[in-house]
Length: 127
Image 1 (cartoon, one colour):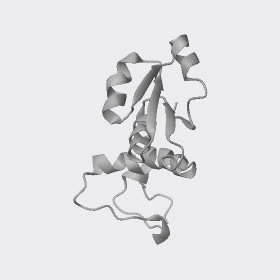
Image 2 (cartoon, one colour):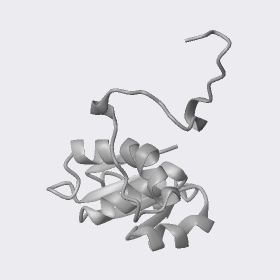
Image 3 (cartoon, one colour):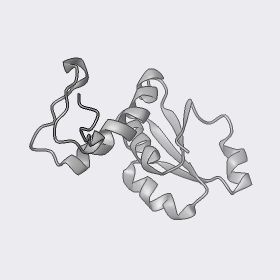
Image 4 (cartoon, helix red, strand yellow):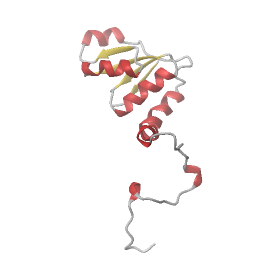
């Protein structure tokens, strides 16, 4: 490669890569919907599968409802777990419920935290 050649990294139109690290995304799917699955999705899917969530580990606490937390709640709920969202922001309760969380705990509420001790089989921290 000529050292003066401009490259565009993730914005390139073409790349050369090993076929073992490539997957085809159906043209029926919207890229903006698939994109999160390739980053936040695998980051949360892997530990939830590793700990067999939904197969004996039915009570899952998800800490943080950002990009990763959204995916963790959706995956854990879809695997059949009883999901509790733990967040400092009470404003995120409606989002957590919409994504599949069964319960919501505001972590600024000390009494709620005390009541939830030893309640979870798995906790995934997405902060």
